Image (cartoon, rainbow, N blue to C red; front, side, top):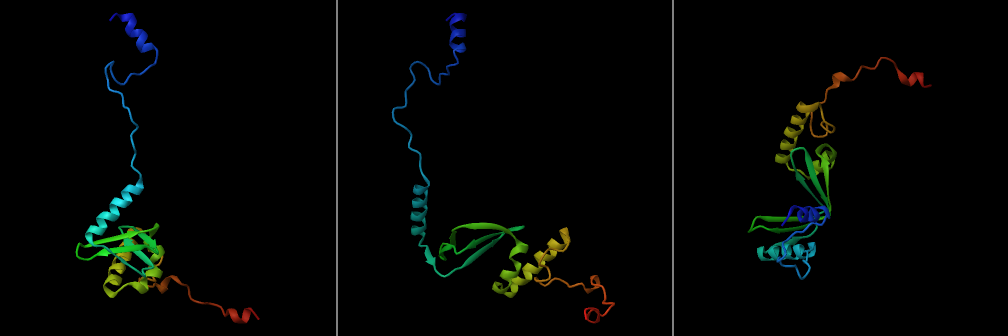
Length: 155
């Protein structure tokens, strides 16, 4: 090939992906949808012997700084396979936002662990919100003493 032909081919802006004898794709590629993935997942869970657990209103998964909060999830479990499946809409919330609501649900061991976590957060960045609800120390030194009698002034 001479130089003029090469420049002519390159100058047209046409991009050629294959050579003259390359095979052309004759049928379109079928992309998989999430429906097939969901069916496959349900099939694998069925093989594991997962059973649905009814009556669970909320699930909290604790991470380092955040909590993954599920409201009215579908919970499935296979104790023999040590597999738990939690599905449904989730929200990522801060631990301090959920502390008042989850205290009644926790056992004594979990409560002690939560107190330690709250103390670590307090040491890292000042006292967190809800530290008093989690059993933090109440400092009454910050509240000034009452000097006047406000009941007489309001009459």
